[in-house]
Image (tube, rainbow, N blue to C red; front, side):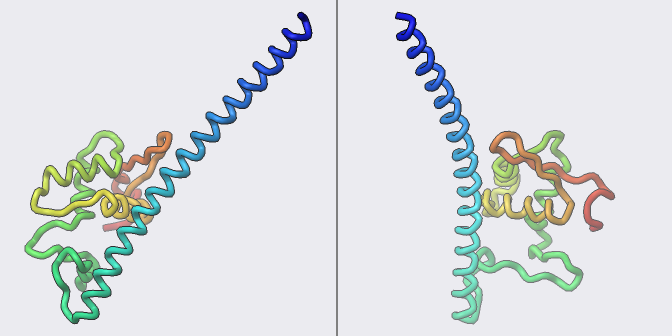
Length: 160
């Protein structure tokens, strides 16, 4: 009987260890899938933009304002036409007004609610947020597999 108890105990310990490793590996893969999904979303967005640019270049004229990115004006800022703020300006304003870190989805939802006349996509907002981070104008923080953004304090980021 003692040998049977030891064997059961050894198997129980091995199963518990394997289960723990399995849970850790599943979480690691889940995070990797989330990262790859975000990367795929960005690549899909870039693909659509490039296809639209290619069509516009082949036809000689843009088909709509949304299909072709705006050109930079002489002063280094983007012109959004008709005095409308750019998406990046709207994102900066939203982050400045927010008292807590925000996800790209939260920013997108708020911008859609505030600007019903604009077509706002989460992938474009995420790309814009990452651009702000790259320029030091915003900060990125991870909590688990989620990414949150805050606006850099004045004097901390790039001069504007």
